[in-house]
Length: 229
Image (cartoon, rainbow, N blue to C red; front, side, top):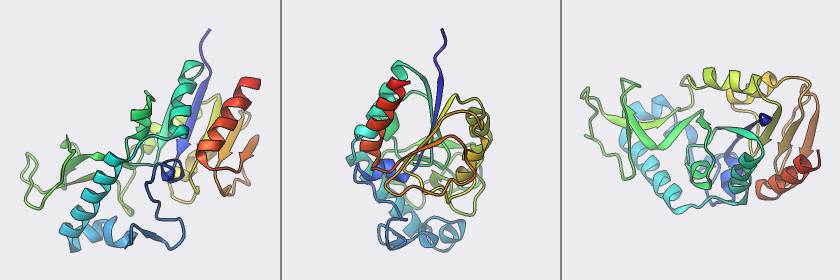
């Protein structure tokens, strides 16, 4: 008998409990920076050195962070379900927790690419420096989808959501598009669960169970609910 398909959309809230800060928490800043100063093509053009420094520090932060109970709980669901995680996060905590099927909508902090040719992608664990070049001679930049850039992985994410038997949203404000729009592709009749400290608006979504708790607690509640079905 084939396993039911669970599709999970995760956002910054799931990694916040591992010590990785979110820019939407309170002051609208990300580690003291305006997002427009470090996470847009305009910022890159204006001051690439600052952008590289910012992401080099984020890379160090992720290396120091550890998966929390929410990441580990989602990985354990693979014992009983066919689980695909669609994450807005650029960290690798889902991978380190043991999840196998992960789609990174907004790129990955441990990858870099040519600033001109998006297909020239390389692994990176240390710092990217000004003067570091790709094979095409172009400056290397973080392989991150910045604000104001297209999100090509969304084309792979939509059919995954359409195929879900159960859809879960964890730790995302559902205000960053196109990621937030994935909720609308979940089949109307399937059960949906939204886990967050502050539940985002889901007025147009049917069959929703809200779990208004931090991700680590909410995922444990989800596991119990799924067991009881």
